[in-house]
Length: 289
Image (cartoon, rainbow, N blue to C red; front, side):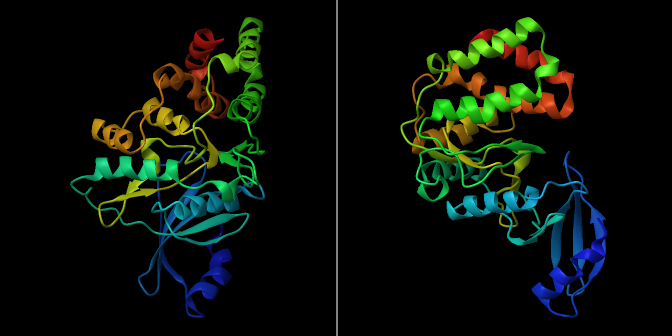
């Protein structure tokens, strides 16, 4: 992205003298380009951009951050967005506070217990708009059945995107799993607002040493989705899980459902990054189909 295209946005925010005096790329993402920008007044900004972004790619991320903030979580302040970019306040990380892991558990429990009625158009599950998991469009059509939502808005679209990776026997397993999903999952006691992509890289440490949540793929669903994702790639401590369970006890049978929920992010990784994730997907299909 040509950074001069930000000029009008910056002048609207900070006045006619606003200009970028330094910029540096920020590593760590697989989908977007990211930059640390420094303004003439010393202000730090964070820019995400993508040359071929879909029309609502960045606005849907901004909506997700707004939903998390409405639920009481700390997120980077959204300063502006367009089809081409998302502009955020820059987060200067500090050392984690003494009880960081416990507080992170409490924060996630707070998210999962937040009122969700503003996000689902009168239904129990879904979200106000579709959004993105990485660069994959994530469907969020509202539903009153969690199991049907997970089938039609999560697994079916990803099976379709990954269909060419599967043998005929593996395709049969996909159909079997979808048909018998009611035997594997349960409806939640209450709907929860989900971060949607909760691996350890999507939680930062803010300047006060507390957690800041980034890069959401929000929807309203079963809170076990977020918990399962935290276990998929690791990075969360025992203190985190203990604090979460103190506030929001787990329903019986969660360990038996965990890998099935992680089928969705693994399918998305198969779609985005290729066959290295095929074995993990097929292992789960054999277990649950």
